[in-house]
Image 1 (cartoon, rainbow, N blue to C red):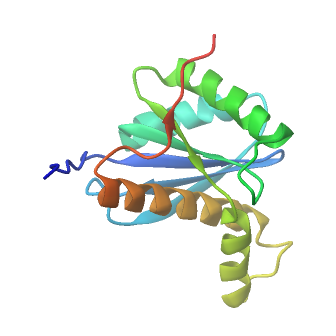
Image 2: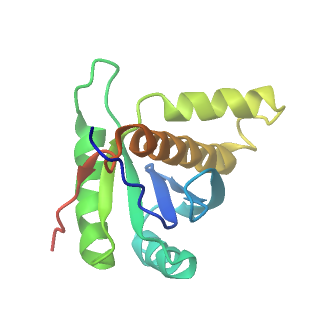
Length: 157
């Protein structure tokens, strides 16, 4: 029987969008993901993510990869792949992994609406909630499979 190994340590997850980047973190045992903050997308976003990795002493960063419902990758996925590659170069040796994020924003928005948060007022919170969903799914995948989730990102310089 294959032995499953749990990698202890905090992870950060990011939900990369055109305007904002939602960030979530988990406890060192990887039991629960919680929202951290929403970072404005753009020139300083990766520097802020690096600060958060250092602040949280993260052992890994998980980036949500947007795919269509049939699993295909489009322009948004290409953009996120490029962003993740540049982030991996900045954060090395902390690994960056891409995980499937289909429906995370929809799931997060539905949860926020159910909590009574209005869409316009809750956009930043929805981005954080999407990052929480991404991270919680990645943690569960690792717990069940015994392997790191998604695919490793090679640094792009």
